[in-house]
Length: 300
Image (cartoon, rainbow, N blue to C red):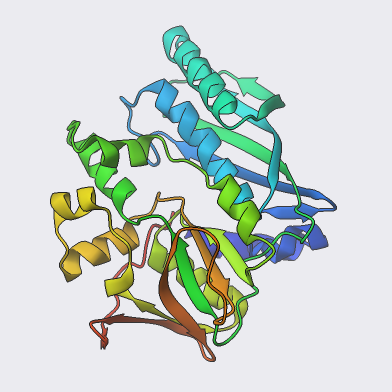
């Protein structure tokens, strides 16, 4: 069963308005935003990954969901499976570093020790304060809206390749994968202006598709406009294949948002597409429609 299919089976139980019908990245309960993300060894991080980087990543990916709601972090709850002492202590070091970097408090959580050795699976719940303008969902895009993305796309996917090859350069690509930075300040600035917003966790194409589906619209994405870093271009190139790889790789944790076509975002961002009546994703390159890749992004 795929992730989307499993979530669909849960949707009948999500009867509280805070759940947003399980069609968003977080729950909005009164003046609080709540989100929970898990990461697993062999899926989100390598078995020999530095535990400090794993802790940073666990915190960052959860705070990125708060950023997409324009929320101010309040604290986190940790779910942790105990392992060998050294790994655990290094994880705690990384956790403290990440919490200090983002000025977030640990509020509590739970621990357990698995009965048998198993790949590590870790969970974190992040709690934030809803902005005065309200927390934007991924479902509010309107026909005619422009689609924007912050930062650059593809660096983290390239960084994963480097990590798997045990390579260390280019260091900026490796860092993008190992230590993503949630765009909390940008999210707070954008929240009052956007019609819809989410973070790019599974790939630009698949996440844009999710926003369009949730909004009941079609979306057209200009592959040539997808912003790439100089390091990515040097590593993989700038042809169509390199751009498709960037747009489907995931783990970028940039902000993807729908904006009134008459507005320009007040943060550094790139115009990558438009919403229209209809359904589905259209990909163009050089002004010409091109076939969609077999996979738009990552799915469990």
